[in-house]
Image 1: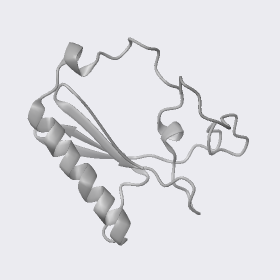
Image 2: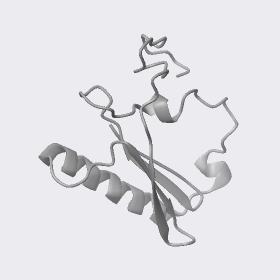
Image 3: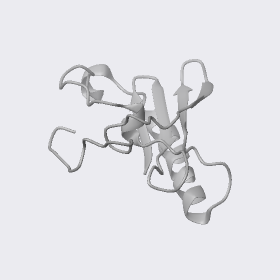
Image 4: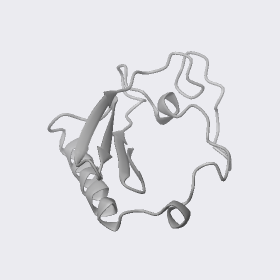
Length: 116
């Protein structure tokens, strides 16, 4: 899964390949629990720079192509942050959580629910 999220002037992009052999984190390793409804403003409430959606979407599409072709350096295990106001990127290493409720040694998430 190649994930991209935006709000206001910030974007975050990552690739999740947790079920392959190796030490790749899953989405729950990074975002352990769903946030309570209403905590984060919606795009219409908080605003989104329209061009940022295109920039994040282009990076997301590039990551999908790289994954399909098996070329380049994957974002799996990293969170790419883009600050449009500062015109800067930051790449943060994300490690697999051995206690993750989805992919850890003793998973507690075993199905899909409406709330996470």
